Structures are given as C-alpha cells and as structure tokens.
Amino acid sequence: MRRILFISSTGGHLTELLKLKRLFDHSDYHIVTEKTKSNIDLSYEYPNKVSYLVYGTKDHLFSYIFKFGFNLLKTIYLYFKIHPDYIITTGAHTAGPMCCLGKIFGSKIIYIETFANISTKTITGRLLYPIADLFIVQWENMLKIYPNATYGGWIF
Image (cartoon, rainbow, N blue to C red):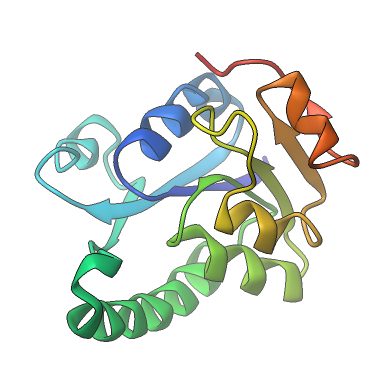
C-alpha cells in the first residue's frame, strides 16, 4: 500500500485537502497541519494519522522565525518517520519545506493550487511548480499562468 502524506496549513488550505479524504481508504496516509483550536479534533477523527506543526503567522515576524525554524526540524523528523511515496498538498508555507525535502529523497510531489487564487500565482505555487510531479489547478484560466499544469476542476 502506498504511503501518502497530506500536508497543508490550517484554514482553507486544510479544508480543501480534507476534501480528498476518499483517498485515505486506498493508502497508508498521514496528515500534517498546523495545530489550532479549529482543527484539534482531527486527531480524534483520524487516530494516529495526524501530526501537528506549530501555528505561526508572518504578521508576527520575530516569533514566526523561531516557529518556522522549529517546524523545519519537525518536518525533517516527520518525513523520515513517515517516508511517504507521495506528498499531496494544497499549500501554504508549512508544505513548502516538506515538499522540497520529499523531492530530494524521492517522494512524488502533487500540488493542488488553491481554489482561492483565480488569476495569480501563490508563493507556494511559485516554489513548487518547478519541482512538482503533478501540478493541478482548479481554474481553467490558471493554465495560462502555469502552462505545464493539469486542470483538475474544483475540489469542492
């Protein structure tokens, strides 16, 4: 059975990612996201299948630097613990380091550009577009911006 790591930031990115839960039944899956009050119940819904990173926002730059550093170390630990065949992500900043590490060590990267962006690139999209094995957009007009992407339609 293929090991798939699903990773995203909390909020809308996580909501989109969890729309793919039908894939959970067909894989040895693990979910990684930031720990917030809004998603703490995930660990009850998916026992032993969820790991949390520290929530941080660039609005508080000083503390974000330390949180990001901690998350980088935890990302390395989680990657080698899970050692996924595939990494599927909807972004954002929590996913970038995991996907880069995965690419170096042979995981296939599947990136789904967020539904929220209709006509511009996201920062994570810019970072992962060159390394993704499959780059999916949810709006057909995004193919003009990402010409090698695959139009997948809406996750919702």
